[in-house]
Image 1 (cartoon, rainbow, N blue to C red):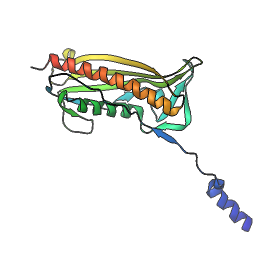
Image 2 (cartoon, rainbow, N blue to C red):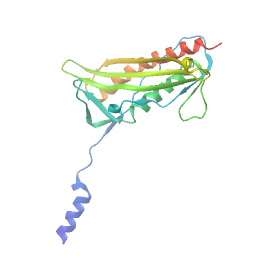
Image 3 (cartoon, rainbow, N blue to C red):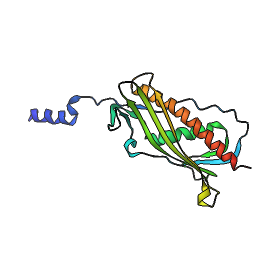
Image 4 (spheres, one colour):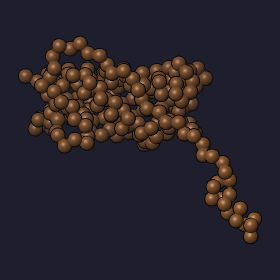
Length: 201
Protein backbone atom coordinates (compact mmCIF):
# COMPACT_ATOMS: atom_id res chain seq x y z
CA UNK A 1 0.00 0.00 0.00
CA UNK A 2 2.81 2.43 0.88
CA UNK A 3 4.56 1.64 -2.39
CA UNK A 4 1.34 2.32 -4.31
CA UNK A 5 0.94 5.71 -2.59
CA UNK A 6 4.49 6.77 -3.52
CA UNK A 7 3.98 5.56 -7.10
CA UNK A 8 0.80 7.61 -7.52
CA UNK A 9 2.46 10.67 -5.99
CA UNK A 10 5.32 10.31 -8.45
CA UNK A 11 2.91 10.16 -11.40
CA UNK A 12 1.04 13.22 -10.17
CA UNK A 13 4.21 15.30 -9.99
CA UNK A 14 5.72 14.00 -13.23
CA UNK A 15 8.47 12.15 -11.41
CA UNK A 16 9.86 15.34 -9.87
CA UNK A 17 11.28 16.54 -13.19
CA UNK A 18 10.92 20.34 -13.54
CA UNK A 19 9.24 21.57 -16.74
CA UNK A 20 11.52 22.84 -19.49
CA UNK A 21 11.90 26.62 -19.59
CA UNK A 22 10.39 28.26 -22.66
CA UNK A 23 11.98 31.57 -23.69
CA UNK A 24 9.60 34.10 -25.26
CA UNK A 25 10.62 36.86 -27.68
CA UNK A 26 9.14 40.11 -29.04
CA UNK A 27 10.18 42.16 -32.05
CA UNK A 28 11.84 45.31 -30.69
CA UNK A 29 13.37 48.15 -32.68
CA UNK A 30 13.73 51.95 -32.56
CA UNK A 31 10.86 53.70 -34.36
CA UNK A 32 11.66 55.36 -37.71
CA UNK A 33 12.59 59.04 -37.55
CA UNK A 34 10.79 61.45 -39.91
CA UNK A 35 11.60 64.90 -41.24
CA UNK A 36 8.39 65.59 -43.18
CA UNK A 37 7.15 69.14 -42.56
CA UNK A 38 3.44 68.48 -43.09
CA UNK A 39 1.18 66.60 -40.70
CA UNK A 40 -1.87 65.31 -42.58
CA UNK A 41 -5.27 66.11 -41.10
CA UNK A 42 -6.52 62.57 -41.64
CA UNK A 43 -7.02 59.41 -39.59
CA UNK A 44 -5.81 55.87 -40.22
CA UNK A 45 -7.43 52.67 -38.93
CA UNK A 46 -5.20 49.60 -38.57
CA UNK A 47 -7.27 46.43 -38.85
CA UNK A 48 -6.16 43.06 -37.56
CA UNK A 49 -3.59 41.38 -39.80
CA UNK A 50 -3.97 37.86 -41.18
CA UNK A 51 -1.10 35.39 -41.55
CA UNK A 52 -0.22 32.41 -43.72
CA UNK A 53 -1.31 29.15 -42.07
CA UNK A 54 2.26 27.80 -41.92
CA UNK A 55 3.30 30.63 -39.58
CA UNK A 56 0.01 31.07 -37.71
CA UNK A 57 1.29 30.21 -34.22
CA UNK A 58 3.79 31.41 -31.63
CA UNK A 59 6.39 28.96 -32.97
CA UNK A 60 9.69 30.46 -34.12
CA UNK A 61 9.76 28.71 -37.48
CA UNK A 62 12.84 27.93 -39.53
CA UNK A 63 13.35 26.36 -42.95
CA UNK A 64 16.44 24.63 -44.32
CA UNK A 65 15.00 24.27 -47.84
CA UNK A 66 11.86 25.13 -49.77
CA UNK A 67 10.04 21.99 -48.62
CA UNK A 68 10.85 21.73 -44.92
CA UNK A 69 9.39 23.60 -41.93
CA UNK A 70 10.50 23.21 -38.33
CA UNK A 71 10.52 25.24 -35.10
CA UNK A 72 12.68 25.77 -32.03
CA UNK A 73 11.75 23.50 -29.12
CA UNK A 74 12.30 25.93 -26.23
CA UNK A 75 11.83 29.35 -27.85
CA UNK A 76 8.57 31.04 -28.87
CA UNK A 77 7.22 34.38 -29.99
CA UNK A 78 5.42 36.01 -27.07
CA UNK A 79 2.32 36.55 -29.26
CA UNK A 80 1.13 35.50 -32.69
CA UNK A 81 3.38 37.11 -35.36
CA UNK A 82 0.42 38.73 -37.13
CA UNK A 83 -0.62 40.63 -33.98
CA UNK A 84 3.00 41.39 -33.05
CA UNK A 85 3.74 42.92 -36.45
CA UNK A 86 0.44 44.85 -36.63
CA UNK A 87 0.91 46.25 -33.11
CA UNK A 88 4.45 47.36 -33.96
CA UNK A 89 3.26 49.10 -37.12
CA UNK A 90 0.42 50.75 -35.17
CA UNK A 91 2.92 52.08 -32.63
CA UNK A 92 5.17 53.41 -35.38
CA UNK A 93 2.26 55.12 -37.15
CA UNK A 94 1.23 56.86 -33.95
CA UNK A 95 4.79 57.80 -33.09
CA UNK A 96 5.47 59.23 -36.54
CA UNK A 97 3.34 62.32 -35.92
CA UNK A 98 2.40 62.30 -39.61
CA UNK A 99 -1.33 61.78 -39.11
CA UNK A 100 -3.99 63.48 -36.99
CA UNK A 101 -5.11 60.17 -35.48
CA UNK A 102 -4.30 56.47 -35.75
CA UNK A 103 -6.83 53.91 -34.45
CA UNK A 104 -6.30 50.28 -33.52
CA UNK A 105 -8.60 47.37 -34.31
CA UNK A 106 -9.90 47.53 -30.72
CA UNK A 107 -11.25 51.08 -31.07
CA UNK A 108 -14.72 51.86 -32.41
CA UNK A 109 -13.56 54.97 -34.28
CA UNK A 110 -13.52 54.61 -38.06
CA UNK A 111 -10.46 55.99 -39.83
CA UNK A 112 -10.51 57.86 -43.13
CA UNK A 113 -7.91 55.42 -44.45
CA UNK A 114 -8.15 51.72 -43.65
CA UNK A 115 -5.03 49.59 -43.43
CA UNK A 116 -5.14 45.81 -43.69
CA UNK A 117 -2.24 43.41 -43.96
CA UNK A 118 -1.23 39.80 -44.36
CA UNK A 119 1.99 38.22 -43.10
CA UNK A 120 2.97 35.92 -45.96
CA UNK A 121 6.52 35.02 -44.89
CA UNK A 122 7.98 35.07 -41.40
CA UNK A 123 10.70 32.57 -40.66
CA UNK A 124 14.41 31.90 -40.27
CA UNK A 125 16.09 30.62 -43.42
CA UNK A 126 18.82 28.25 -42.32
CA UNK A 127 21.25 26.76 -44.84
CA UNK A 128 24.93 25.89 -45.06
CA UNK A 129 25.86 29.42 -46.19
CA UNK A 130 24.00 31.69 -43.79
CA UNK A 131 21.16 32.16 -41.32
CA UNK A 132 18.72 34.85 -42.46
CA UNK A 133 15.52 36.32 -41.02
CA UNK A 134 12.81 36.51 -43.70
CA UNK A 135 9.87 38.95 -43.47
CA UNK A 136 7.23 39.32 -46.21
CA UNK A 137 4.06 41.37 -45.65
CA UNK A 138 1.29 42.36 -48.06
CA UNK A 139 -0.43 45.68 -47.30
CA UNK A 140 -3.67 47.14 -48.65
CA UNK A 141 -4.72 50.77 -48.06
CA UNK A 142 -8.31 51.84 -48.73
CA UNK A 143 -10.06 55.20 -48.69
CA UNK A 144 -13.10 54.85 -46.43
CA UNK A 145 -14.82 57.86 -48.03
CA UNK A 146 -14.64 56.52 -51.57
CA UNK A 147 -18.00 55.14 -52.73
CA UNK A 148 -16.80 53.53 -55.94
CA UNK A 149 -15.35 50.08 -55.29
CA UNK A 150 -12.83 50.45 -58.10
CA UNK A 151 -11.40 53.63 -56.57
CA UNK A 152 -11.55 52.54 -52.94
CA UNK A 153 -8.25 50.62 -52.95
CA UNK A 154 -5.39 53.12 -53.03
CA UNK A 155 -2.61 50.58 -53.23
CA UNK A 156 -1.80 46.95 -52.58
CA UNK A 157 1.85 46.05 -52.23
CA UNK A 158 4.12 43.37 -50.83
CA UNK A 159 7.07 44.38 -48.67
CA UNK A 160 9.96 41.96 -48.36
CA UNK A 161 13.12 42.10 -46.31
CA UNK A 162 15.83 39.64 -45.33
CA UNK A 163 18.40 40.27 -42.62
CA UNK A 164 21.43 38.12 -41.82
CA UNK A 165 21.86 36.98 -38.21
CA UNK A 166 24.77 38.49 -36.31
CA UNK A 167 24.27 35.90 -33.57
CA UNK A 168 23.14 32.38 -34.49
CA UNK A 169 20.53 31.69 -31.81
CA UNK A 170 16.80 32.30 -31.24
CA UNK A 171 17.70 35.68 -29.70
CA UNK A 172 19.86 36.47 -32.73
CA UNK A 173 16.93 35.55 -34.97
CA UNK A 174 14.66 37.91 -33.03
CA UNK A 175 17.21 40.72 -33.37
CA UNK A 176 17.55 40.18 -37.14
CA UNK A 177 13.77 39.99 -37.62
CA UNK A 178 13.45 43.23 -35.63
CA UNK A 179 15.89 44.99 -37.96
CA UNK A 180 13.98 43.68 -40.96
CA UNK A 181 10.69 44.98 -39.53
CA UNK A 182 12.22 48.38 -38.84
CA UNK A 183 12.99 48.75 -42.55
CA UNK A 184 9.63 47.34 -43.66
CA UNK A 185 7.73 49.59 -41.23
CA UNK A 186 9.42 52.69 -42.61
CA UNK A 187 8.59 51.72 -46.20
CA UNK A 188 4.94 51.05 -45.34
CA UNK A 189 4.45 54.33 -43.47
CA UNK A 190 6.18 56.26 -46.27
CA UNK A 191 3.77 54.77 -48.82
CA UNK A 192 0.72 55.42 -46.61
CA UNK A 193 1.74 59.05 -46.18
CA UNK A 194 2.35 59.54 -49.91
CA UNK A 195 -0.97 57.92 -50.86
CA UNK A 196 -2.98 59.82 -48.23
CA UNK A 197 -1.36 63.09 -49.30
CA UNK A 198 -2.82 62.71 -52.81
CA UNK A 199 -6.36 62.79 -51.36
CA UNK A 200 -5.85 65.39 -48.68
CA UNK A 201 -6.73 69.05 -49.41
